[in-house]
Length: 106
Image (cartoon, rainbow, N blue to C red; front, side, top):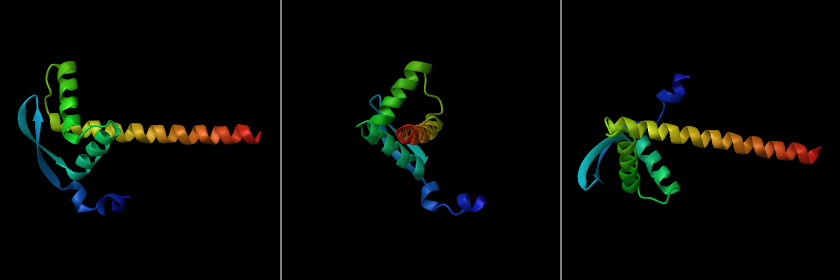
């Protein structure tokens, strides 16, 4: 099992810091490359740039909780939830397709 994880491309877990404008203030966020890739994918799915997505997420979590404590961790959890939702949607679509094929064959 560990080989699957241990043999991951080191680039994926290399950290990168990026400057982002949030509420008119430029701030630096440090995340691993895999999370930056996932945020870029989530942003594209929503017709946003990565910076626009991050600013929007910050606004939403601040509105909901009153503050965005540990925002980098929030972004990591957002990425994991996004991947989980995509996986669940993929399984649901696969099941629906299989069910359609089964009922068509019956």
